[in-house]
Amino acid sequence: MKFQLLVVLLIPFVGFCQKKSIDKLLDTYNTRSIPYISVQELKMNTDAYTILDTRKKEEFEVSHLPGAIWVGEDVNQFSDTQILKNKKPIVVYCSVGIRSEDFGEKLERKTGKTAHNLYGGIFAWKDAGFKIIDAKGKTTQKVHTFSKNWEDYLRTGIPVH
Image 1 (spheres, helix red, strand yellow):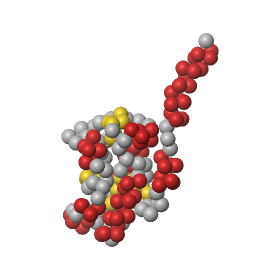
Image 2 (tube, one colour):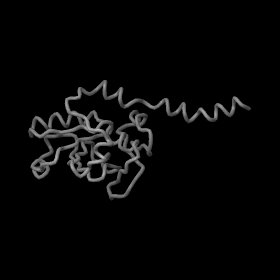
Image 3 (cartoon, helix red, strand yellow):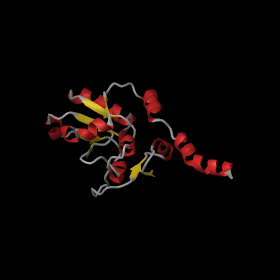
Image 4 (spheres, one colour):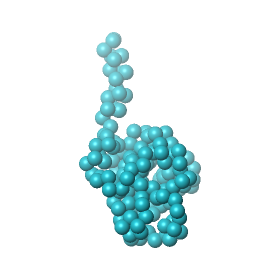
């Protein structure tokens, strides 16, 4: 009986431990060429930044950060001069922060504007308990995980791929 109770109590913990670490992922794939900004820092100062979502359109439509502007993955397709003339610093994000670092590097080369990369992307934002919205502007629990392989990096919310 005690063993069964212990197993029942540990099952959620074991599942939690099996989730993959965004920290290790970013250490593996990123060079920190674009300075990181934490989800907590961005949340405290959201209005001070222009927030650019660098994911695919279908990912953005499932959910995104409130106030984020979709720009897609190709910086050469992005030419919104109103955003670039804005004096606010830019924050780029994607699912976890890999694609957004690439976008940020290209954006800085193209425009000379400094960009910050949201550490852990929308996954970290959602996992911190912050609100995300869908294409209609309604709060949602759904997060597009890019592919099934990436959903192990999301700890909260409903994965969609």
